[in-house]
Image (cartoon, rainbow, N blue to C red; front, side):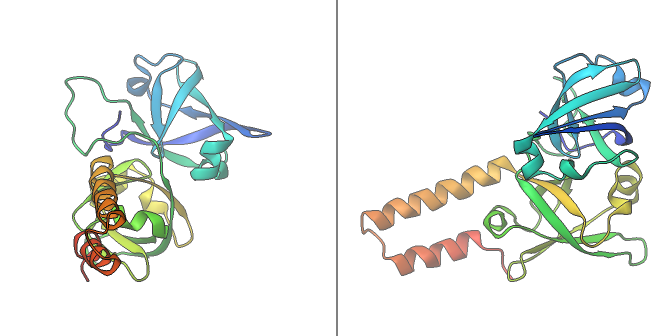
Length: 226
């Protein structure tokens, strides 16, 4: 389990590409190496990965094809910076929100704006996942717990605002249009939405409500307001 409060951004130092498998290594500072062991879970750009090998200053991971298909990790190369978060420990503060590290997919950056004292990123989401995203709701983006500021349901875009501390600790300051961002929707929100949809579907199946009535209720409850 993670909280979406990343410790920092650190460089990829080695990659090995094999058929259906990517192995890569990251250099980490001493404070993040404390307690690392084979089998430990660490979030890399929001993806929960298992430590397979380590030294006093380096951790190594193996990434299978399924994860490469769903996330942005397939594009990693030596020198790239990635967001890193160690797994949450009992008793520690949850500064963001509960994040599993099981990434749902990638969103594409469509614009980066820098008005005075602000940093604004807008990205396009896959249509099937938009129903789980709401204004003021949580979303993990490259492992960072962020609040959704605006939603454009017609264009399937979401907008987030980043404070200077987030830019300092993460890789968001280097993002540009066309880049892919790993996202994970809030699981509690997903459960609520799916439960409502299933419940309404059962009502329709038993003809307690018409299809038009079901659609109207879904639109009122689940679609972001303009």
